[in-house]
Length: 277
View 1: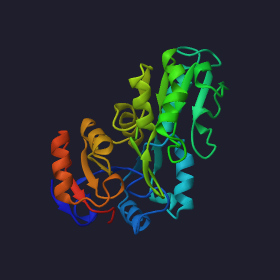
View 2: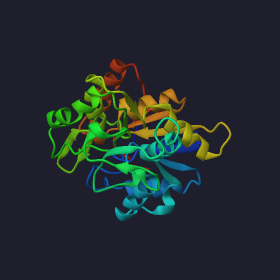
View 3: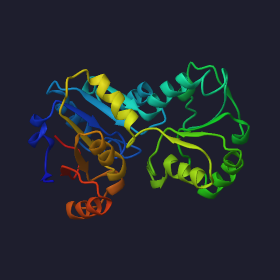
């Protein structure tokens, strides 16, 4: 698990790259220094780059936001978000596991309704009246965790299923980190509510990303800032991994991260202090 200074030291070993968005390219409010240029340089190799993001928003919504932040649209193939995977699963569940027009309680940020875009659903305002809860984001920068528990407890008591489409435990914001949707989902699970987690580190998003590569047994490098999401997911999918020392581990050093990974039983293959080519 060597520490590297630049991705250019190892990229020749790989055919494709799965790269995290928040904590690697963006700090929650703005791009990291040199991130857009590094992504552009990496794309210049002509190898597929899929941005693999625990975001409840759909893929193209994320792609447009990256362009607004100054990333070139041709510097990545696409954004495959947990929200995109969840949308496909929801479309399949309607009329089978769910009613033909299910009642959905959607919790998102920025008035984003892309999670249900084009689907025959009815939105409801109270969780306990829904057929399904879609926990697409956290607003824990303005809503206390205990308030979420009180809000969701009646639904948990009625065993209404909850799909968390962003399993991140921490959410990066311009003011620091706050409990993410994954942390709220943990509380729902603790109250006995049926829970499905969609995104990293779970298999479905990696399986879908592999399909979109359209390569035969590619050597993939997963790059991310979270040991429990990016590194664990990449390892489980059979890929090599590179931990980035920004995002949730900002301020940590290589030795700290090695020790933390060893404690978790999840080891990364490479470490780089920031995303740079």
